Image (cartoon, rainbow, N blue to C red; front, top):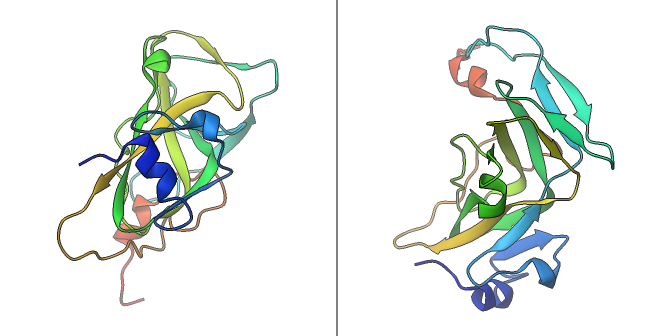
Length: 176
């Protein structure tokens, strides 16, 4: 089951932490998250799953930045979230999707116990100007059935900024 807006608000500072929290961003079944002003773009092609691929930082100025089709932009939410005893999920807002902007390519599923900023895998169908602090996506929460094991991975937990893929860590030899 998905929590309602009032249920989200009633669980703040217990199972749900959103920093900063603004009650104006609370929806009937979700909470809108905003786009931070920093993006990353990979610098070298082709990307290699077994390597830590270098990326270049872009800053979205107040007057906006035009994103181009065919480029993957890694962004992050302005809000830091922590979730316990629930499964957090991320979806793009319909108003954003109707402009041809994909907010996350595949990674909208969170884990119980995740704490951090959400990395957004942003792509666009047409050139589009984006702005810092735009309400770009929404987080919603599913209840969980069964024993809960909180997320413990060191790859993304407690991140402090935009993160490139850390899939390369899965290929490391654990004996070294």
